[in-house]
Image (cartoon, rainbow, N blue to C red; front, side, top):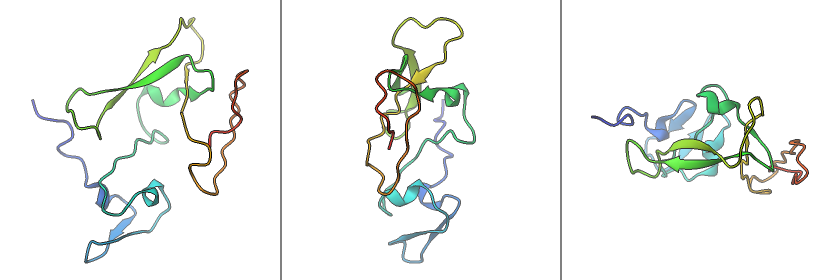
Length: 127
C-alpha cells in the first residue's frame, strides 16, 4: 500500500508563489498564509474555505460540543495527520456541531476577528 502523500505538490511551489533563482527567498504574488512562515520551511496548511469534506461545515463555539484530534493513518509524519472530530458530550439529533478553533487572540498582527458564537462563555474574539 502506497502513501496518499507521495504526489503532493512542493509547498514552496504553490500557486501564486514565485521562487527566485537562488532559492534563498520566496516572493509572494498573492496574499495568503505563506508569509507567516520562513521561506525555507516546508509547511502545509489545511484550509476548508473552498473544498473539503463534511467537517468543513462545523463552526466555532467558545463552548463546543465536539473536539478535534489528530489521527495518524497513512504516515507518522506530523505534517500529515487526519483531523478527526469526536463528541465531547451527548449531542441531540439536529444540534449544530461546533468546535473551538483555538486561535490565539493577537497572534496575527493588525487582524481582529470577532466571535459571534452566542455562548454564555464567549470570549468575544477569535483573533
